[in-house]
Image (cartoon, rainbow, N blue to C red; front, side):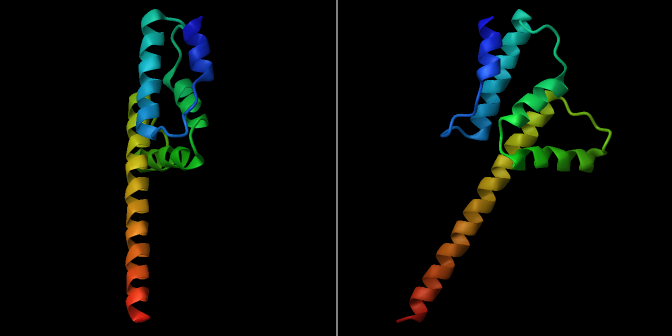
Length: 114
């Protein structure tokens, strides 16, 4: 019963990365499967559960991956966790690139005012 409650209440912590959250989620699912607390719950249910706890951009990343692999492709939980982690890496690269461009623009603007 404790695992049921932990699963139902699982939320992503504000300071937690998607990678950390998905790892915690995967570990909980592994424990649940080991103790059979939920019985045999299909991956698509677990996938919907984790996507409901993340920002919409991560759900969009899974949809995009599905189109790339064919609309009828059913991902396993492991595959979705990998997609989510890749989406987070991509987001961080985009943010770093944007921050670098902003810094460069500011530096160029500052030089021009001298």
